[in-house]
Length: 463
Ligand code: FES
Ligand SMILES: [Fe+2]
Image (tube, rainbow, N blue to C red; front, side):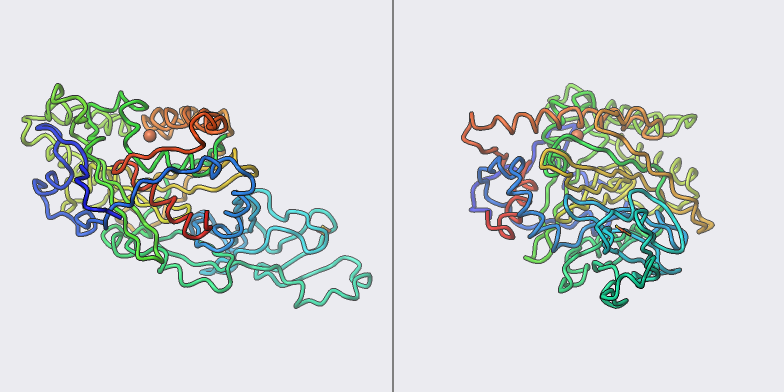
């Protein structure tokens, strides 16, 4: 915890103030969620490299984290019809996520009770769950429906051969599972997220871009690459003209049960690293250009002054996004319209608040500690008609496929590819980390969310 040391919480310049100063200058009433601030900083401690590379540690994570935590597995809209299903895999964990009724979902074991064949390898649909090996069949509620040559299995009783299921709960249109039958309600894990997203009901949104990316790096290496803006100066230097990277505010909300953290990176201001060589007005123009690339044909705004640059971009966003989605943003704050506001719920869920970057992330471990999968979604508010458009189809991206191969990602594909290009080399470097005592070193403030993640891991796993 914060020991009273004078820790600098971000850097600022005339053109790039801290988040708290920008919120004071906002032209609208700022949403309470954005004004909320977190608790004290965790102490910095060396992070053992084996947590990213050691199969024994991955096994401990399987036993203590993935088998006992609420984890996001998708959205309701992914499974629109009764019988629609998809596999959810997190390391050794595998469940079939299925719409079992008009307003009911289940997470059933993805392994045949006959001789173990995987029951669901890809998104599919049907009235029954049928094993492709010998044809054992289950109903959508997990009850046993049919065994070929049933006379040959006198010991198979229907009740004992239901497909085992994990707990499943829903929030904001997202589906979560917890394999632990004694798990506390999901809301206890979501913590502040349940109140902070009241102004932007995630249920009233739909997926406009959806990709699933395989990465040659541990799931925490991938997750951690998205928990801090410290890497912008080196990895995304071409975004510094309109990104207040070092002005980012980091908050931790942890009550011992809910482990949540958040960052707010202001957009439409230059990086403090640029030392005011880029003006606030130029930063506004760069931000409008970047936002505009996702909206071809929409005229860019004329920014008139340094003092009003950010609010002018926000006003343009309210008008153009409002027209595109048939949605009224007139009360939304400048911060809500522009900034990157990303929450993280341990272990694998990142919902983003606001329209600056309306994303969500899902992270899962792969078959070895050196591989993982990240799902990325863009969402948009439902049109004024309330009619839910069909969700975007999920695009599978293999290890070496770039996001820039997906035109729907627009300018952000370039940013994601910058991040993804680092990840395999981080994993490779961690494997040689004996050269520096087998530990990583974290920044006290800008990497505090990573420290918090490791404090949670350590408190649950014990190492
Ligand atoms: S393994 Fe599934 S029916 Fe035999
Ligand atoms: Fe990044």
